[in-house]
Image 1 (cartoon, rainbow, N blue to C red):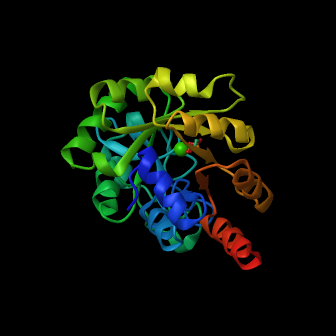
Image 2 (cartoon, rainbow, N blue to C red):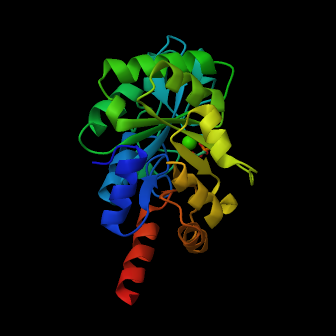
Length: 260
Ligand code: G3P
Ligand code: CA
């Protein structure tokens, strides 16, 4: 299994002869995002990592959900931070996507990490919101308690998250998310103590990848989903492709191999 260090990620890329695939919120194009069904489907589709989003419940438990509220992805309403774990667990997180996923629950980070051990690395996105300091602290404690540090990378659009995690745990892996054509992405990673750069797919250029590699940084893009977007991300030289549709990425790699 790949760890999120530059060396192991690049070695895996070389071995596979293609970028790694990261299942975005699992396989959110074909399963309800951030559920166990989504993560398991992503693994069945052959991803090398899964990405998820974390928030804190009212009673201080880390739960895996993208939005600050449960409205879009469950049959409930309200802010995650105003609901207890028991209240969150009572919600259906699958039916909104498709009736065949009825009964899916919002997972805890603990549940996902326990399942992912020896199965797939987990890229944990700490969402930027007013509870972010508590979420970072809780995430570090939870990952440590579960002995999962070697199987995760912590990422965020809030680059203080990488800085904070690496200041506490220098050996852990982290990344910085961004949208934009930065003048100095390597400088950003260094200031944030990050191991990886995670630009929005359309922002990547080959010279950024070259400079990142020279500085010992991997580059993962999010979230090219159409065939054209995926082809662009691959052509730009991304090391890891975070997509909603892992099967589409595999189809492109297979076609490229067959044509070679
Ligand atoms: O992996 C990064 C990506 O997930 C960031 O955007 O909104 O899908 O969490 P979002
Ligand atoms: Ca995310």
